[in-house]
Amino acid sequence: MIDPERHAENRGWIESKLRNIPGFRGYLEKEYRRESDYTLRAWMADLLQKSKVQLDTYSRTLVETLQIDDLPAVERARARLDQLMSKIRGDVRGYSAFFGFVKVDEQRLDAVYDQDMAMVIEVEQFVSKIGQMTSGQTPAKQVSDELLQGIAELEQHYSKRHGILKGLADERSDTAGGTAT
Image (tube, rainbow, N blue to C red; front, side, top):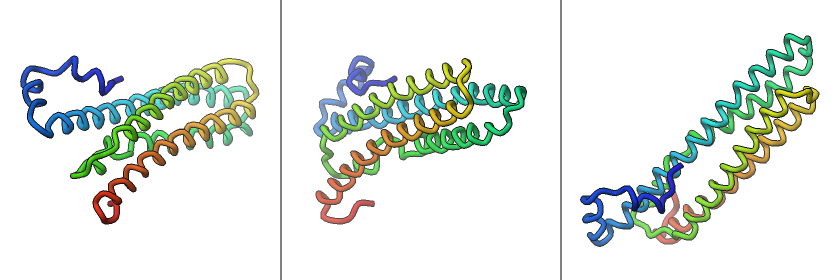
């Protein structure tokens, strides 16, 4: 994962010189945050995508053991997981809509970053739990219920991120004297 604070270690001499130009340093830091945001969200979505292989294997096991009545619940969980991955991948890259000509509250951006890092831990735990549930003797009903609950928790966590970003949009609106776009 990319940490915005670590970009300073990897920049070249040209970038180091450009950072001395008034206003350019802040621009670069915002660009780093955008790239970090995109990379982090792509990583989470990719991890969730890989977990679907375990769900596919589990679904085949249900079919092979003639537990077909339990299949729709697992498929509902799989569909919700697809929706969550689409949200995560489909969000605007970085916070570019909020960086036009307005000074953005860095603390609020840090709150988004902290929220994202907490979600990384949740995604990793969820994927691990999928592996444990689908490889053991857990009843199919319990698997689907726990999958749906875990996905709901991830969706809720991700919506908190949007609440923080909405604050950025409101801040932009207040500063610009107009409405947020």
